[in-house]
Each structure stands twice: as structure tokens, then as C-alpha cells.
Length: 390
Ligand code: FNR
Image (tube, rainbow, N blue to C red; front, top):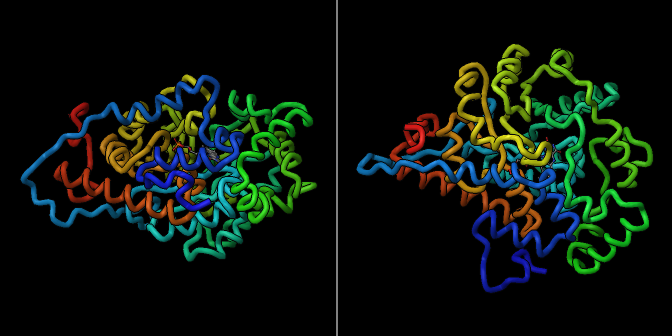
């Protein structure tokens, strides 16, 4: 199948267009794994809607020659204030998906974050790019494995650790249940086989030519590493619900570089993050995949940024779907955004080239928004550029 999918009449332009391409290309259980959220998906929907609720102020007759979208996130120069969020199993969405995504991010000049449970190992990603990715950590019960993971990431040159704190246990996603992901093995295999039978392109390109499919960063730690089901079973027993703020001390001893906490939604927790001495936090509800019914991130961002934004770097993710949304996030107090599903949709729908083009379009959209809002520097975007907060 061509990179543009089967719809020859239209070329994709937006994240929503790439979502449709991804849907046409991926087996349903994988598309739903990416697309879906926790239980009734209220928070998932609210995340997107909350950005749209903020109206930009258009200002004219301002000298906007030389609008510049460049900035730095956690000390790393970026062409726009955006990073690719960690996504588990991205290598099942496109052939060697994490490698393709890291290349696209580097081509555009934004950070890529490699998930603990990515398919491609860090060494493979490092072989494809000049700049080391940010490394995302899930705390595992076996601290020896965590220590080994961190040592390897540090030795590879990673200096930014994104520690995800909103997954003491896995969220509940009805779509996964419907697709048989937790069904008895025989039933699960049957459902999978039916779904796979309609996606020969993916079977050839990703399932066959994209092997191996294990959790690359954990391959040497997990028994029967080449079996994905064994991997999943193991990882489910390894998420550690006992982690507390006291463990951040331990983590900072293991990691001399930058530590960012991902998954905060509460002002009190943001103050605790400052006390814990981390350099950044990501206002996040895991893209609406953990606890349905929590607030959208755009709603929680302003108070958190106001409370701690002077003391550490506040980033945000969840429902950011355009360059204009990036502008809104900055106007509400974030230093930058992470995006999850949009990059996976583009990658699944059209590979590295599609993702590169999407990111370039977002950069252009951000530039347009800055131009029509009358602001030339990213650092100067603020609440004064929104109707709602002005
Ligand atoms: C995620 N997310 C995630 N977060 C993390 O810290 N480690 C991980 O391995 C994953 N895996 C993952 C898989 C999939 C399929 C999705 C959609 C999300 C959460 C992710 O990093 C980010 O917080 C959200 O995706 C942001 O929301 P949007 O941009 O997808 O709306």
C-alpha cells in the first residue's frame, strides 16, 4: 500500500487525517490500543475539547517580521516548543517505529522520548540519530532492573529522564477488552486472526519485516523475551504501586541528569515536585488512558504553571492536536507540549516522511498563530493572547 493509504483522492494534512490513515492500515486491536482511553473515554474527549475552548486574540499592525518558533525544552534547543511523548509498543504501529519517529523528530528539531516499553531498544534508536532521546521510565518492582536500565541510558548519552508517575497500575480500557486482549488465549487468538486477515499490508510491512517485536529495552531482563504475551504478563506484575515521593530521592541518586515527573494534575503534587528537587513536570492524565473522569489537562495547567512555573519547567500533554493548540498551551503557562497519538497516527499512516511533514505543518501553524497574535518570540506568549484569560 502507498504511504498515503488507499484514499488517492485526498492528501492528509492534519492529525485527524492521519488518524483515518492509521485506522485503514492498522489491525483494529492496535488502532484501538492507540486511539482509545480509559473506560467511557470522557477525559480523552475532554482533553481535546478543553484546548478548543480557549479563544485566541487577533492583533494587527504589529511588526511581526522575524517570528521565531525556536525555544529550548529542558535545556535542549528545539525548533518549536514540542516533544514526542513516550509511546509503548510504537514499533508495532510502523516498521521499527521508534527509529522512524526519532529520525523524524531529529529532522524537524524536536526531542523524541523513548518509552521503557518501546519495541526498538535504545541502542538501535541511537544508531539512527545524532542526539540521544529523552528516556522514559516506569518504576518496576525489581529495582535492579531499573538501575540497569538507567545505567544503560546514561552510558548511551541520554541526559533527560521522564519518570512517569500516573501508572501505579494499568488503566482499564474497554476497547482492549472488546478486542479480546484480556480474553482466554484461544478466543483472543481467534479475534486477532480475524482482524489481521483484513490488514495484509501491515502483516507484511510491520509484523513480518519489522521484527523482532519484544520490549527492546527489557529484552535481556525478561525470561522468554521474544514472546510478546509473556512480556505483557511480566510487565503487568512489575508495575510498582508502592512508589512514593521518597523514591524520587533514590531516583535522583541513580540519575545525575535532568529528572522530569510525568503525570501530575494537582497543584499540591506540583509543590511536592519542587520539594523533591526535580527539574520539570508534565501536566498529564496519560492521554485520558488511566483514570476516566479526571480533569482535562488544559483546565489544570494554568494553576500549576502559576504555582511552580518559576521554579521548574512545566510541560503539558493530552489532546494537543495542532500548532494552534501548542500556542494555547503556551498562553496558559506551559513551556512546551508533548504529543502522543498525533505522532503515532502519522507514523502508522505514512511513516517517517508523514510524521516529518506533520511536525513541519504544526511549526508553520504555530508561526501563523504567533504572527496573527502579534507576538514574535515563544517566550512572550502568555495569557494576554487569549480572550478567556485576558
Ligand atoms: C501512551 N502514553 C505513555 N506514557 C508513558 O509515560 N509511557 C508509555 O509507554 C506510554 N505509552 C502510551 C501508549 C499509547 C498508545 C498512548 C496513546 C499513550 C501516554 C503518552 O505519553 C502521553 O501522555 C499521551 O499520549 C498524551 O495525550 P495525546 O497527545 O495522545 O492526546
